[in-house]
Image (cartoon, rainbow, N blue to C red):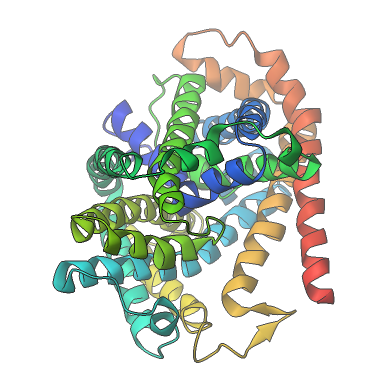
Length: 442
């Protein structure tokens, strides 16, 4: 029982949990999906899925974590001896995601150092990530920062999150002000927000569903782990709504910050990570005060990446401390090092290992496919099965109401977990396997 590990304040818990959810995907993927899939119509469906999938699953994980005070594997083991597999899916997903996520985090550090020393981005992004040593070094440095924060314990995570999240918000506003004042910026806002009926299709609905699943870090063990440190006095439904609201707000603000600038310069908006590391530096180089705004932008991207990374590492540390009975310091150092080593092939997959493919995926993309299309959806389906049918969800209702406030929507919540959520997660799973099938076929 980790009874001595608790968040010092509600604000610290909200900042840490929101920071875990707010990552690189919020800063480019969500606004782009909005623009490509119907603008305001996509946003409406996304918010619906937040309510009927995101918040209910987050409440399950948060209440289970607080009730058991255990890591994901032990927490599910407490409700059913066979349910440990749900926690295993989550811990494995968190570890693998961090192994390649920190590679991107290393790229961010490289850009910050480059702008701080030369007032410019690396000359060629593709050439930089194809080098045999430098991407590995920056991957190591980013993971070292993440490991150091987690080494300081829950208080270290809370202090880092309480500092980084408000700064992220402030820096995002600075970039927004500059972006929307560029000539032709209004076209970028139209791209993101104006409804486009012709672009809103069934695939757009599926894209909104998948984005909810991944944006809120569901079934990665993060919310269970952070929930296990939560005070019994905290209101779980309100906390989940606060996190989901902050996550969506930051994603919308990112769209206002990025796409007006992209459209102002007539650049292509649909480039994924290349938008941040390839396209936006061109924008910064062409505007007055560009190096300053570039530093501000990559600093906020770094904060988003670090707060997510420490949450992913904390999941594996919690597992090692709780299930393997390691000391926290031992677990932090060993897992940080292992994650670095596992991530090295991903760091080299754009250069030295560029010709290596697994099922037609690069090493980097293969690890992402394993987590996004297999571990996370399977974790979601098995979670619904064991929580909804092999156990009694009423036990979690008791946990939700522990603060003394009746949970008036408990019957609706149980219905969602038993029926609606498994269907929605099943759609994500089938879609994921179909995408694997199409890529493997070539």
